[in-house]
Length: 135
Image 1: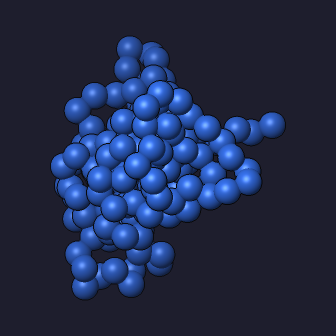
Image 2 (image 1 turned 90 degrees about the horizontal axis):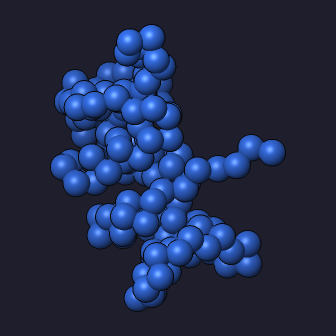
């Protein structure tokens, strides 16, 4: 069975600080930093004691649709080893309607400073960079 990847505790905290308000099933306890998956209720950053824990894909969709940040995660070979890097593009507000039709229309903004051993690590790094530097 394919299992979804969720954001880390630190990223969940940053998302809450930056206004992420999409309901999701995952959540972190603020005190213990433990991840919980709850099929009985949605978490929407609604309390003092928990952070929503969206999937990495949900967080990336929020960056794209709400903040007009486009991105590419691409593979590369370093010394014969498969690694992953990312590139960020910023979409201008007046071109927002092009997001679905032409996802490559944004202006180049930044490449990752390093490469990552997994696709998941690259996604997490991309999200954290955007939250810390662009929003």
